Every structure is written in structure tokens, then in C-alpha cells.
Length: 273
Image (tube, rainbow, N blue to C red; front, top):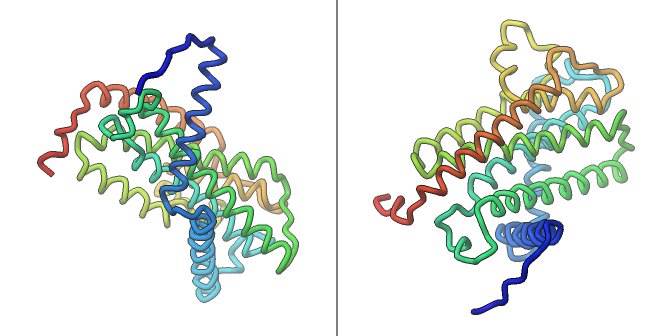
């Protein structure tokens, strides 16, 4: 019940905050399933199912010849992994504990720690699931060749960061109009199934269709990741700077909105719903 408050230096406070985020991340990962192994298997199954669906769909439609020269399944996995990482990070941040949550009654906790924990928990699951799938594919089917693995991993992290940043904006706005922004976040997630460009190459997209996709930071991230993965593909219509700027802008807006929302938070907000 009682504890002795000790004065900490700046470095000590930073390590205490990182420790708190770590434990909150572990709690967030275990919330999805009590058994950590089963939780990881569920994340792997979701990715494998989406890969299989897009593989057979594109193969049935005869669209394999329109793709990049290289491993066709690796082409599909590059889009699915980044899409899943982006959408899972956004969903985890939107559903993270808010200022009126019971977890906020514990002294060290605050909404920013909950947001960081939710984002890192989703990243942990997606990195592990992608690593397991790629390992099994490399060992059991055929060797994987990635032209620039560091750049590809950087795009993977950028997809995660942009999803978490957009999720922060939705989370800050959710308490004011939960029904409206809940629908908007779902529409954004569903639109990304097509709008992320994971099923086609940006270079092959007709110019009159490009404005429907170029606004999406995930579209840029997936296309740039394929430029790092495949030797014979060079992105021409996308850039790395655009998703970086969108991510930074959403983080700033999300932090400002979260701070403002926290000051006006009330348990009675959802009383009438």
C-alpha cells in the first residue's frame, strides 16, 4: 500500500520508464491469449492464411506474369507482412488503455506508456511470426534471397511506426466521438486491403489510378520495401520521405490530442452508451 519515494537521476528515471514499458508490453502480448506460444501461433496463422488467399487468387486470375521478376511468393509475403504490421499496430494503439482505464490507477502508469506497450507488443508478435514463416519457407521450400535486408527491415519498421502513429490520432479522437471514429478506423483498415498496393507493383499502375493510392503511406512503404528486396525492381513513383513525414506529423497530432483528451477525461463519458 505504501512505498518509499526515492529521488532518481535522469538516467535512472529513463531506465525505470523503459522497465515499465517492458512489463506493460508483456502484459499486452499476454492479453491476446494466456499461452504465449498459442498467441504466436495465432499471429502466424493469420499471416499464412492471408498469404495463401492472395497467392491462389492472383494465380487463379493469371496475374503472376505482371509481377516483379523474382520469387512470386516472396512478393506476396512482402506486402502481407507490412500490411499486417501496419494494421495490427494501429489496432493495438487504438485499443490501448486510456486515461479512464483501471490500469491508470497504478501510480507509474500513464496513457503514453500504454500506447508504447501496445505498439511494441504488436511489433513483437509480427516480427516473430514473419521470422518463423520466412525460416520455414527458406528451409522447407526454397532459399530466400533479399537484395538489401537492412533496407527491407527499415521499411518493415516504418510500416509499424506509421500504423502506430495513425492509431494515436484515432485514439486521441475516439473518446469524443467513439462511434464515428470507430467506423472511420475500420474503413481505413478495410481500404488498406486494396489501397496498400500489396497485390500489384506501383510502377505498373496506370497514371489515372495513381492518385487513389499515392496518398497512402503504406503504399509507399510496401513499394519501397520491394525495391530493397528484389534486385530487378526500382521504385519510381513512391518515396521513403513521404511515409516518414506522415508518421512524424501523426505522432505530433496524436500526442497533442492525447494530452488534450487526458485533461478532459471523465469516467462518465461512456455512461450513456
